Image (cartoon, rainbow, N blue to C red; front, side):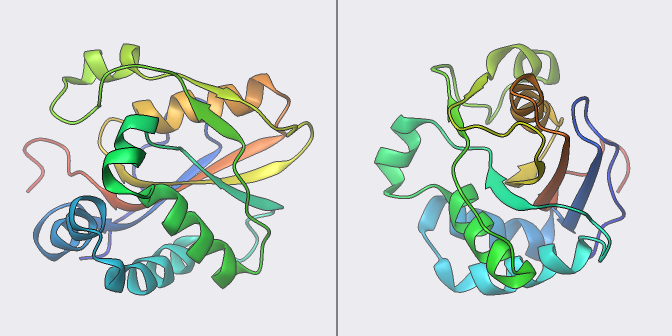
Length: 173
């Protein structure tokens, strides 16, 4: 099911979501994230790219990286895989700009815990750049917010978020 653009977390100029994180949308994202079901990547990237307005103004694509432990366990970073596919569809360059600082996984944490448990630092120059920041799921916006604020701290001119799925607000369904 397509999704209306969710509320914009602090640090982002806009946020675009392709699907609601329930039903088929949840199965597609979880399949990629937890079972390396790469057959979903093309479809998800198409849906994500279509949600980004034609006048987006972004110059490059980056992603909110998973932890090094999760990347090691899975053998890949699902946000990176999606970012590379979205960048191809939008005809934009893509590159890693962030490093995730050590901390607990976001899965299963409360909104308050999510806001205080994730942190990033930029490791590439982004000064003056307009970036499209990709992630797989937006639940509270804490990860996207932390990533966007780290990019802004390094001088990013604008950060637009784009996610494969948005978790519906409690009681909205």
